[in-house]
Structure formats: C-alpha cells, structure tokens
Amino acid sequence: MKNITKALNIFVLEDDKYISEFLREFLSEYFANVFIQTDNRFTYSKLEHIDIFLLDIEIPFDNGYEICKKIKLLFPQKPVVFLTAHSQLEDKIRGLELGEEFIPKPFEPLELIARLENLLSNKYSEYYYLNGLLVNKSIQSVLDSKKRKEIKLSNTEKKLFFYLYNNIGLCLSKEQIIEHIWGIDYNDKANSLNVYINNLRNKVDINGDIIHTIYGYGYKMSTH
Figure 1 (cartoon, rainbow, N blue to C red):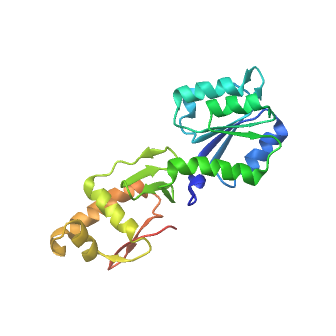
Figure 2: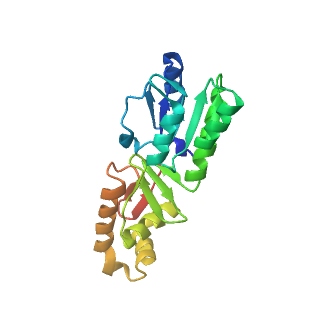
Figure 3: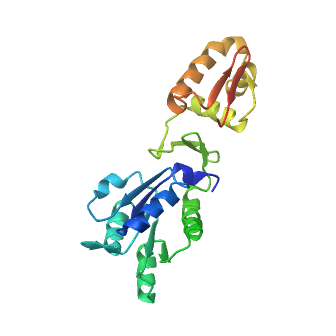
C-alpha cells in the first residue's frame, strides 16, 4: 500500500466496548484517524471524509445492513466491510451483496488489516503519501490527504511540483529548474521562479516540510 493507509480515515461501527476499544488502538497504528461509533446516532452527510467503513451487524435500534444501504446511497464508491459474529451463509451472501467484504468474529487482527489494505489498494494504488499529500504521477494529481480533495495547481505550478517530485531528494539548481519549466535563459526567469516556488509552498507546503531552499544554489523536495 506504499504507506497509503497512514493517510486514510476509517469509520468503525461496533457496540461492544471491549472490541471497539481494541479496534481503536489497533487500527490507529495503520490509519490516520479511527472514528468509533457504538450506535446509529450519527449524521451520514458528515462522513464524507471517511475512506472505508467497518460495520457490525447487530447495532442497538438498527442493523449494519440498513446502515450500509444508507452509506452506499451517499458514497457508492467507498468500501464497506462487515465485521460480525453472524457467520451463517445467508448472512455472508447478504453482506457481500451490500458491501465489499465480510469478516466473521472472532477475527485475526493482521488478517483484518490485510483485507482492508487490499480493498483500499484498488482505489489508491497509484497514489503515494508525501507529508500530508497524496501524489499520483501518472495523472499528475495532488490531493490533500485529510480533506481527500485535489489541490488546484496551475500548469506551471504542476510542472514545477512534479519536476521536484520526480527528483525527490536531489538538489536542483535554479538554472536546471528554469530550463525544464521554461526552456529559456536563467536571467530572464529568476524572479518568476521565486514567485512560483512561493505559490507552490502556499498550496502544498505551508509548514515548510517538503520544498527546501538550498541557499545560493536552488531547491530540493524532501520526504521529511
């Protein structure tokens, strides 16, 4: 998964306090955020930031099947996994008809993670995590990993970002960057490069963790 789960959010619907607390602690090692819910008192429209749902079937005043239907109406592309003590064949068939995966209790924690990662890899296999960003080189896309929304970059900003990204860890001179972006003499575009670097930082690197200035030389993109 190339560390992708570290940038993703999981919603867990589990009414058993012991299991829910175990899942909170265990899944926190793999996901950016783990949201635990023990009943049906939540607002579906506020689940837009969730990347994958883990549902029990037996929930007070409701059931996981009906909750899954409501989730799929709003977020049809987001995977739903049933984690339940129901293990009859008809339960498995219904769960797989509504969601993407059905895991009976008791469960092996590492197997659970493997199944979750397998589902998520289908959606995010081309994205790499970079300090709060999800980066897809093949389609030249940069997402905010928390909001899961694309960061709008101008053509020049995008060209600059991916030139630095494709040479991550390397110190690139201003001359090299300018030649790649504009293909013209350095002196004509030195000020423009400074402006575009600042614009890019404001959009993707507010904390200054990604794009570093090599004083008197140029710039470098780093993973830390």
